[in-house]
Amino acid sequence: MSVRIFVIAVDMLAISVVAGTATLVPIDRTDLLRAAVLAGGAAIYVEATRGVERMRQVVTEGRPYVNLKWMWAFTGVLILPPPLTAGLIVLTYSHGWLRASRRILAYRTVFSVSAVILAGATAGTFLYAISGSDYATLPMGGLAFLFVTDALVAFAFLLSAPTRPGSQALSSRNDLLIEAGSLGLGFAMAAVLDDGPWLVVVLLLTVLALHRALLVDQYLSAANTDPKTGLANAGFWHKKATDELALAQRDSKPLGVLMIDMDRFKAFNDQYGHLAGDQALKAIADAIKAETRDYDLAGRFGGEEFAVLLPGTSAFEIGHTAERIRRRIAALNITIDSHAGPTSVDGLTCSIGAATYPDAAADIDKLVLAADTATYKAKSAGRNQVQLADSITPSGGPGA
Ligand code: GH3
Ligand code: MG
Ligand code: MG
Image 1 (cartoon, rainbow, N blue to C red):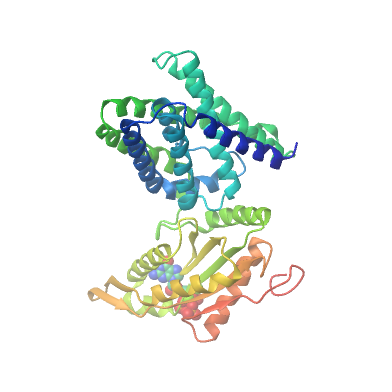
Image 2 (image 1 turned 90 degrees about the vertical axis):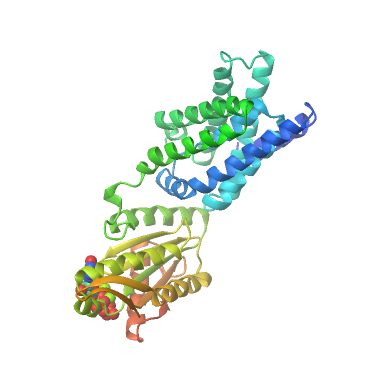
């Protein structure tokens, strides 16, 4: 069976389940209020965690990616009528996709939504059949939910990548714990909602704190971060850039790279001191970060050179992005500790070179090189400007 047929079948099944259960239970005001509280909580959760989730997606690439979003779906299964649960799932996943996962193809998110809806329906039916939402049977509902979702995802994964080892399709022990934990949180959320919506806030804050504390560590190790600016260091940037390029190739998406080199930075150091130079580098790094999206990756490439990875950015768009960064840096007003005490400095500029896959090169080192070559073109053309790479063919040109 092709993965396409399987995915469409699962989507259709989910739609029929939603349609078939739409009028099963009457919906009253309390249900609507609870659904609204959960939708609000889920929206806050997605917004607060999207930076971390974006990086976790990059780090877990190549395996099914798990997160705590199930918590909201499972709460719905336990206390909401089926159509409101389905609505909550659709809302939460579309929001997450729009804000943190745009690089995941839309049909995969639709599939995840369908899988979670089917898992919810199975768990709900199971709990109804054994007529219990007492504390002894709830974990079994959770197990049913977990089993259905993981089985559907694993099957789709196996169909889509038959050459990859089957073990990669299964959730790791760590992933299973995250999944079980999110179902437990859904259970707690349902119990709390029964008592009063305000307690949801307490639980939500607890979840956000744990999310930060536990999941950030997965990628924010000191070894990946440049201590002077907080950006990715060259090694980590390169590793992620390699992964992102592979994804771009697989999904036939463009990918952009910017190389940014500060203009006459040596003169700046000479005038204000090395420490002031370091402070300026931090301010420049912050400016670059502020001008890029969450799913871009800014890194410090050494000295006063920065690299920005822009997944999904094509040759048509990259000039605008680069120009925005250039203007923001040129407009910076930085307070530094110079020889003469705190001083406000402006007028720092940079030269930016831009290159995109597939136009300029088809491997990451050649892409970086093409962007770097463009940076030097910007230098020799007078600095404080953006230059685009000449297109280079895979078999020749400056990158070969
Ligand atoms: P241009 O690029 O415009 O040609 O001139 P430039 O002065 O920037 O020349 P180049 O990029 O080759 O030199 C980089 C200078 O940046 C040399 C050094 O003084 C300074 N620099 C490099 N790394 C650091 C750093 O970590 N902190 C500080 N304060 N300065 C640095
Ligand atoms: Mg330099
Ligand atoms: Mg320079």
